[in-house]
Every structure is written in structure tokens, then in C-alpha cells.
Length: 410
Ligand SMILES: *Cc1c(COP(=O)(O)O)cnc(C)c1O
Image (tube, rainbow, N blue to C red; front, side, top):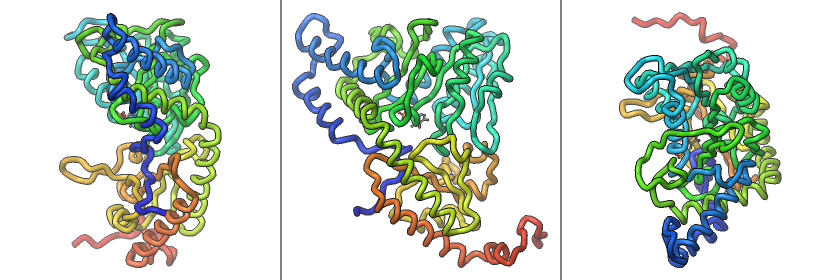
């Protein structure tokens, strides 16, 4: 077993060597610009793009013409959200009352920040809050809908806790009211079955590097029929991608993206089962070998490979220091000034202390049972060590509820 162990697959994945293999010829052999319509170099590259479009479309039940290539999920989200808001705005730029948008406080920054910008530009935004289970339900979305709602954007699965929102049901509610529905499916697609028709989706973002493909390439699904969805381009230029995203295509990246999609489609079922068993083992052992261990978010509505666990009575940074050979994420986010507790965990109602002492462990295609066992032992050892030094944990063991203690402050 090689150390450190990689358990941060929700942040990015190792590129599958089969994907790299598929990409290589596009650098030195098929290097034409797919936009070059008048020679064989261009045509050959265009063939590669068409193949990747079909592979990407097949993974989500779309048509190849409905795929728009981007630089990643951040760009896909920006294009979908700003592009739809500007296209379907009820009043011109510079005025108030341009339309209503529904999103949630637990979205990725790449959704929150475009929505905040639109709010500054005259759109009204409703920021839904989940309950402690972390789920955004169709009922919550329906209650927030107004006559002037033009766009709903709700992620499929959350990147920090792995909880799964009621996306097909939200899509159905939007379709009924003629509201455009976008989902950031970056953590979902490739891991879980997806069908944009059955799931009632108009716009869907995903990214190469979260599905064992290369970094810097993504896709946006844009519905073409029943109903046709139109977007205002965010990048002006040569009018590539049906006018929605100008710029010479990243041929190698797109070839890799397509290959990654095809492998995910083929191996999804077995992969899901294998990772689910490993994740359940990890949760079960950590929760049974120690007390005050909380698995965050809904117990069942969650991705197979991702868990987020809080360990009471340990300090977050010390915990990270104690598990140096396990690469994972903590419930703290580095901002320029300080270590802030995760806004997603706070959104689920966790206090700052518990958010800081949380770990996000995300397994992937190359995670072995041996690695999982090593990680379990390492985390138990680190938590127990820190608790041996904690006077608060001593009080807890004596049965004293520390929330009732009146601390002497002077
Ligand atoms: C990783 C991630 C993104 C950003 O994707 P990039 O391709 O890195 O821009 C957006 N949303 C979610 C949910 C993610 O997990």
C-alpha cells in the first residue's frame, strides 16, 4: 500500500490511464482545428469531437447536439445560470424586477456566486435552506415559486456531504410551471444513472476531472426540444458551439472527457456497489469504535462513495495533523483571513466547533479495502489520542452535559 492514501475524490480524481491513452493521438497526430472546414486535418478532429459528444450524451440520455463543451463545471454553471437569466429576463438590464430565481445555500460557489451577481443586477433570488438532513425537496422549491420565477438551479448531489436532492421531482414541478431548471450534477453524473428526459432536466453541468477524466474540460447539456432552451452566450467570439460558447475546442480534453464518460457508463453498476460497501464499512466502524461520532446529512439519500463525519471533542486542525497519511477534506475552508467553518455544514445546522472537526472522505476507482482499513485505524487512533488530552471529553465521560456548564470568564 502506498502512502499517503487518496480519499479526496470529490475534489478531483486521478485520470484513468485508459483515458490518457485515448487522448494521446490528438496531440501529435489528429491535431487539426475542428473548426477548419476545408481540409482533412479539421475533419479528422471534428470526428473526434463528434465521438466524444455521443459518449457524453449517452451517459445522460441526451442527444449529441445538446452538448456544449466548456472548461469545466464552473463555466458550465456560469453559462447556464447567467445565460438563462439574461435570455428569459422580464425587464432589460439596469432595471429592477428582472425575474425571480430559486437556488439553495448549500450549492457550490460556482452556483452561489453567479446567483449573487444576478441579484446585484436586478434579479430576485430565493435562497432555500435544507433541514438537518441536507436535502432540498420539491416541496420547498414549489413553495418558493412565484409568477415571475424564470429559473431554478438546484444541485443533484452535494459535494461536501454527498446528500441527494429531489432533482427529478423538482424538474417535474418546473416543467409544469414552464420554468427553466438547471442542475449542477458534477458529483452525480458518471456515478449514478442519469436520464435528462425522465429526470425533467433542461440544463445540466458536469466536469471531466470528477469522473476520472482530465482537468479543464466540462460540458453543459442544453435541452433542444420540448421545450427548447436558449441561452445568452457569456463568451463572445467565433460563434462555436451553436453560438453559445466561442473558442477553439480543447480537442484532447474533449476526447478524454468522452472516453471518461464511456468508462463510467460501462462500469457504473459494479463501481457503485463496490464503493458503497467500502463507505458503509468505514461509517460503521468509525461509529462503533468511538462515541460522539455523527454522520452528517441524510442516512440513505446519499452518494455511494462519499461520507462526511463529525468527531466531537477534537479540534479540527489537530485532527487533520493527526491523519497526515490520509488525504481528505476537512469541514473548514481557508479564506484569505482565517479558517472558516464550512458554509454547507453550517447550512445543515452544525455548530462551528463540530463543523471544524468534520472530515469529508470520498472514495474512488482505485480505493482498496486495505486503504479503507488503514484509514479507519488512523482516524480512530488520531481521535482517541486527541480526546485523551481533552478535559471536556473527560467531563463528557463523567456524564456532565458541557452545554450546561457556566464558564468563569473573568
Ligand atoms: C468540482 C465542482 C464544481 C467545479 O467544477 P470545475 O470543473 O472544477 O470547475 C462545481 N460544482 C460541484 C458540485 C463540484 O463538485
